[in-house]
Length: 124
Image (tube, rainbow, N blue to C red; front, side, top):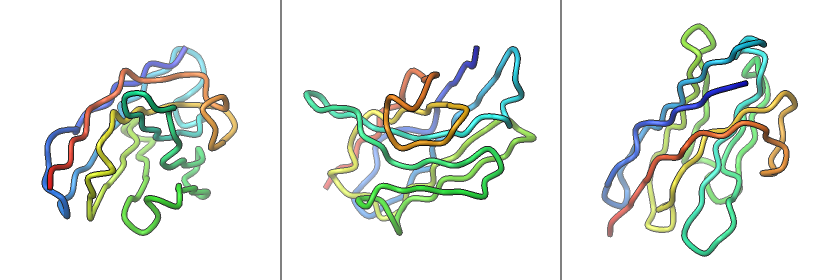
C-alpha cells in the first residue's frame, strides 16, 4: 500500500509559477521502487496525464500541453516527487493528482495508487 499526499497548490496569476510536492510512503516496497506521475482534472472532464518519472529519474514523460513549462523531479531520500510549473496559463487550472505505479505509464489506468489532489487556480 502506498500513501500519497500532495501539497503546494494555490492561486497564482497567469505567467507565474508554483511547485507541487507529493510526499509518499509505502508499507512494503521502497517508495524509490515506484514510478510516479502527475495528472490533473477539471470539472466535467476526464483526468489527464501531465508528467511522469521513472523510479530512477532517468525517464521523463510530459504531455504536449506542458512540455517546456513543467518539470517533474524526485528525491528518493525524501520520498518526495515534485512538479515545477512555470509560465502558468488559465487552462492549467485544475485539481492536480500525484500517482504511483510499478511500471511507468501515461494513462490513468497505468497507476494503482493516488493522492487526494491539490487545487491549482491560475487567474488572468
